[in-house]
Length: 247
Image 1 (cartoon, rainbow, N blue to C red):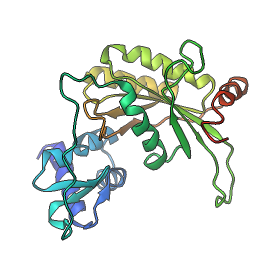
Image 2 (image 1 turned 45 degrees about the vertical axis):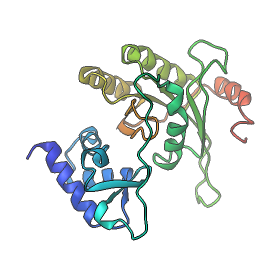
Image 3 (image 1 turned 30 degrees about the vertical axis):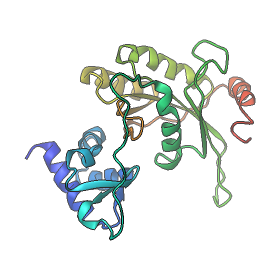
Image 4 (image 1 turned 90 degrees about the horizontal axis):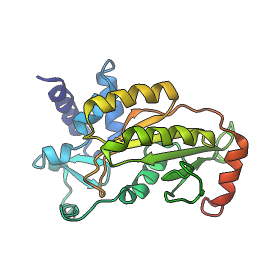
């Protein structure tokens, strides 16, 4: 079997042991335990679209949750087919902002609050990220951590990836963590180069299905590393959106 086939076969085994289904991020972790020497990108790239590759075996009862069809509960109706935009309809980057903001909170768990931003909210060149989030320690935490700013730049145009990388780096001026989010069908050489650059500069790299705003299947290629931003700029930008973040 090929590497992808081995990962897929194991994923089906894991699903068979989980009648209630298993979330994408948890499935990735289980596969990583089974293949510890495998790159995370190879694992996520092999399973992100299991439901479309094997529609007679696997379905999604909800976004991000995989389940074998044989475990479909009595009376449960299959979710309607996702209505994707027609080829004549233009999918804009803004279509993915809310989905990624939610993913930062629910799956990546790096934010407690995250909102779509974009545009020219901060009125400075390269100053406004597409997603702006914060992480605050919870009341239940024994050790309370200080607030962190987490931002992201989403880029659909594969001809503008290096520009997007520069933007993600610029956001580190005021953010503790910065992510670059690019299409999974970008040229492999571009992804590999960005992967290396992101590791060097501490920027997170996320791949996603840019053809599907309903279920973008975000996957981690490199995690963002935390650093201390310039407090002057961090406070300056936080004041502009404090009400939106419920601060």
